[in-house]
Length: 133
Image (cartoon, rainbow, N blue to C red; front, side, top):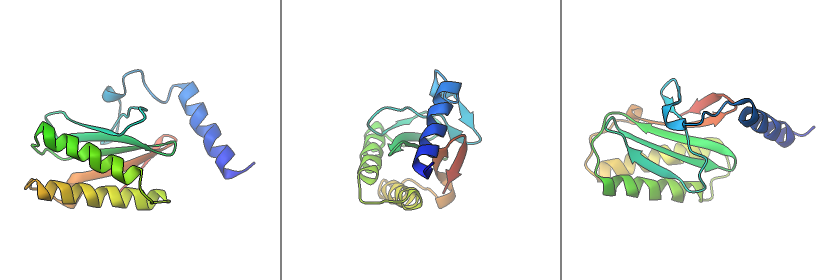
């Protein structure tokens, strides 16, 4: 059996077995909040920072920031940044995670939001284990 077939079987099994809750916004794995499987990446501000979610192929990508204050317009711009990276030319998961983190830090610095590299966590949910940058 190929690696791709095994990965798809694991993902399908996870969804059937209930690894994803009905309300992903309330699910938490460490500091990684739940995700939406919608087709377009999106970000929102929850008062404690910014949370974003999108898909790289079939792999959910989650971005959480530390406690930062951003406007609704800036949150929308972060959604556009995430969409641009996920639809870009990166072909490996590691490159995508690194690229997203770099682009988010650049955008937040452009907004004059004081943020450090460790304030932005970018994770891919592989089965039930997050891979984070």
